[in-house]
Length: 85
Image 1 (cartoon, rainbow, N blue to C red):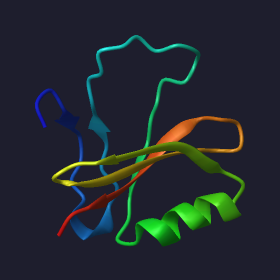
Image 2 (tube, rainbow, N blue to C red; image 1 turned 90 degrees about the vertical axis):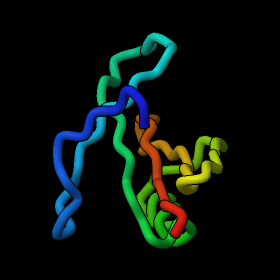
Image 3 (cartoon, helix red, strand yellow; image 1 turned 180 degrees about the vertical axis):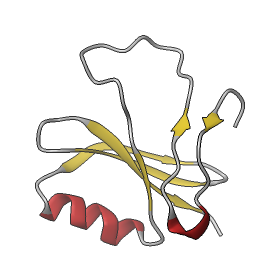
């Protein structure tokens, strides 16, 4: 994606870290946003809920895949992402 920076590869199941530019300024103290990749979006979002998190109500469909924005029990947002195959 234009403007993104990837610091590591997902080879061999290792986590990767991407930096994504956004147009709006950040409000509050959160400075890190995680995107968690999954092959089963429904199971992953259900797992987040079972662990005390919850959906924010935001879901985005892209050509590359689907992104569901979730929040941890303290309200910190992160994305659960399933790429299209």
